[in-house]
Image (cartoon, rainbow, N blue to C red; front, side, top):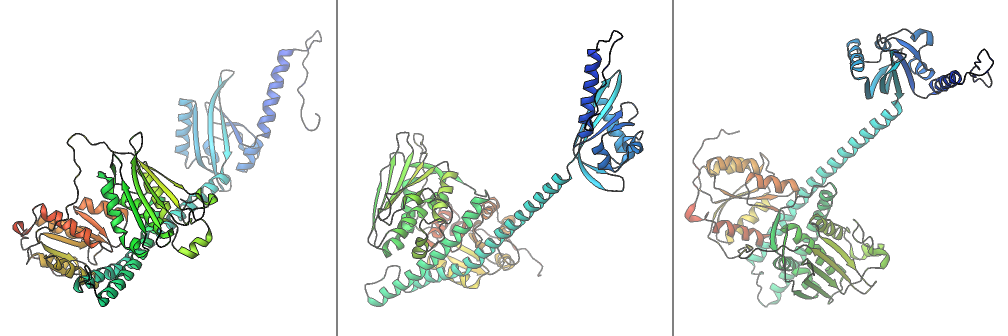
Length: 550
């Protein structure tokens, strides 16, 4: 022996020559023994018929806290390999039948009760006509601990993410509710003081300017809430698209009308040239509206007063629709172009101090565009040279004779409306606004009051908040529909979650409005429902039904 390593003895024949075949076999055995004893995995050798241990390497002995002489002759199930003897014997039988068995994560109990997580692989070999079982046992305790820590960390992150989402939803509701009341009160104030079409006098002009100022700042707050919620939904993959073929030119016009106030406030020269030959696109209408308002709103924000914004469309050679929004604003530095669509990015840090905002509008627009299979790019020749944003989206070809239904805005027949809103100020304002359009309105603050009122009155339309104090608006509609299946319904929500849209549609609501409610769009939906026949000539009589008072 040299350096603690045994040498294979040299075998010679009677004539003194070395037996090379025997030497090769002895060398192979020695090599195997060295690997066996130096392996950093546990190795057990079992009798294939009895399951008795006939050999074990040093690593396995240390792992299980056994002496060599103590473990030889024991059965596999006698060293605590499995939860119980029956399970161990069953596994041994399976091994004999299949010649192979593997466990990725097996709890092994060493002598003394120590629990060890191991990876267990066993094979059956035929040696000199005898079945021999080799079990390779790898200690994966450290790996298992890391995996458990990773799972715990992932669980904690998911809980934190869910808590954040719930917080943002609750914050949205708490902020939207008073903002909705303020916005509705502005509508009432404009209506009752003739400010919708003000006369040419100083007092009305000043009042109108004051209302416009408050409305602009309400919209800024609503936009901030929307951006935070949109980013959360997009990052979690919770974006829900309701695709329909629309006229892109009409949708762009609607978006520009929604931005008329900030355009007017900065006296911006808006030039619109919508000339795409193929102008129909298959999109989620609300999401496309958001893309356009985010892009034009960004142009308004960074364009100085009396600047210019150009909105154009064209058809690409492959018939894609291209929407370009170019401005004469502050432009984008070359170094900032590559990250301009990143969340919270506004290029130069001084931009945030000068213009405010969260830096989410462009990131949301790009994510929404990509969700539709579209592309969104930005170009700029640098500071003070303006910027151009180019949206490229696949156009939808219409079949001969196919038309796109457009919203009807003409006043419909007056309706009998049941309004259910738990926020008293919002309820009072909306009640007055609905009555101003000639509708007969009854309003209550909870679902039970709505049910009791429905027993005494006839209604054509239910307008209800989803989050009522005694039950959800979804449950309220379900209960009323059991007695009046054709009752039309519009949902209101202060949460603005994607699930609200899906759930309200499934419950049978014609439309969901996120607070603050756009009054003009609400009237458009009401007119559409009235035109379908649920007007005064076709009122629904809700049969009386007694309900126990709670």
